Image (spheres, rainbow, N blue to C red):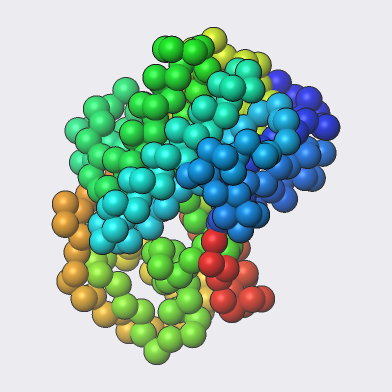
Length: 302
C-alpha cells in the first residue's frame, strides 16, 4: 500500500462523520493533513436526497460510513433501515459516477450469519441474519453493480464488532463498562455468545491504508477483526478485573432470535494486502474504554 503522506492535502468526503466511528476517523484524517468534507444530517446533508448531495464540493476520495446500525432498532423499524441504508449508498455511488470518482470505500458489516467454519474468511457464504446486516449486504451488491456498469471500483470492509470510547451504551462493551463502574449489578441477556471485538483505532487504520493505497482494478473485500473471540462472560470478567469492582451479574435470558454462538474473522487478506494488523487486543481496549468513562462518565450518542 502507499504512504499516508500521499493523503496530505487530499479532499475526502466522509459520510456518517458525526457517528461513533466517524468522529474518530475525522480526527485521524485531519491529523494526517486531509481536508475532510463531512456529510451527514448533523452537518445539514440528507444523504437520502440526491439534491442535497449535489451541493457538496469536489473531492478526491469517498468513504461511506453512514447507516442505521443498531440491530434492535432495525428489527422494529425495517422500512426505515432498508430505505435509509439503501438510498444513502445508491446516492453516494451515483455522486461518484457523475463526478468521475474512480473508487469508493464502502463500510459494510458482518454479513455471514451462522458460520460454517472458523475463522470466517471473505469467501464464506453470505447469510445475513438481521435487517441491518441484509441492508449492508444490499449496499455491497449496489457497489458491485456500479463496478460492472460504470467501472467504479469499491473497496468493501466487513468489520466484526467495533468498540471504543464514545460508543453508545446500547452496545455490549459500553453497557458492561458503565454498569461495572456505576451500577449495583451488571445485567446482560446471555453470557455465552462469543464475538471478535476490534478496537476503533485499528479499524480506522485499515481505512487510512485503503485511502493511501494504489487504486485497485477490481472490487476488494476485507474482513476486519482481531482473529479471536471473547464471550460476554469474558468481557465482564476482564472489565471487573480492570475496574477492581465486584458486582453481581444478572442474566435475563432474553437471547436474540437466531443468536450466533461464536464467530471470529480470518484477517489474513487485510494483513497481506493493506499492510495492516490490529494493534490493540481486548484487555488493552477495555482499559481505554474504562478510562474514557472515568473521564467523561457518559458515552456520546454517535
